[in-house]
Length: 180
Image (cartoon, rainbow, N blue to C red; front, side, top):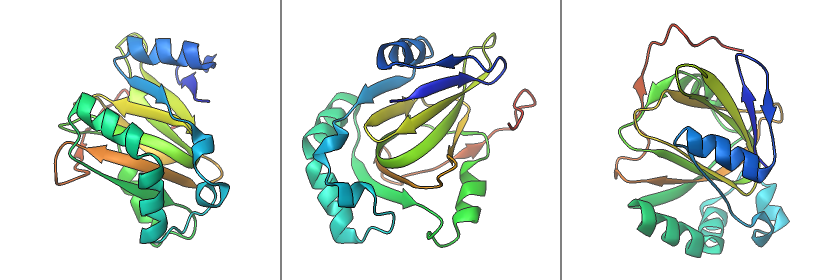
C-alpha cells in the first residue's frame, strides 16, 4: 500500500482511498494491481533474465493492455534495480535529479519498494510517494519529479511509454527543492 509524506510538514497519508484522493487532487494517477498474481520467486528476484521479465509481462498482460488502450501507451518493459545492478549508483544519480518528461511517467511496482518525489501545487511543495508491489502510479507530463529506491534498495517495475524512445528526461533547476 502506497503512503504519502508531505516533505514540508512530514505529514503522512496512508490507506488506498486517502492516497488515491490525495494523488488525484495533484493530477497523479494511482491504481492497484493484484500483486499476488506474480509468483513469489519473480517478486523477489532482482536479477531477472529476459525470460523472467517476459513472464512478468505475460502475467500482467491484461492490466498492461487495458492501461495502454486507455492512456495511449505504445511500448512497455520491466526494469529491476538492486545492489547487484551494474552501475547502480550512476543510474540513481541520473534518476535522483529533478526532471520532467514530455509524456507521463508510469510505473507498476511488482516487487520491492521505491519512492517518487513529486512537486505538487505551490502551497504544498514536494511530496514523497512510497510505493510497493501492486502500486501503479503515473506522474503527469511536465511535472517536476524524480524516482529513487527505499532503504532496501530493490525494485521491479513495469514501465509503459507513449514515445518509442522510452525514458527521456529533461533536467529542471528548482530552487524550491531540498534533498531530504
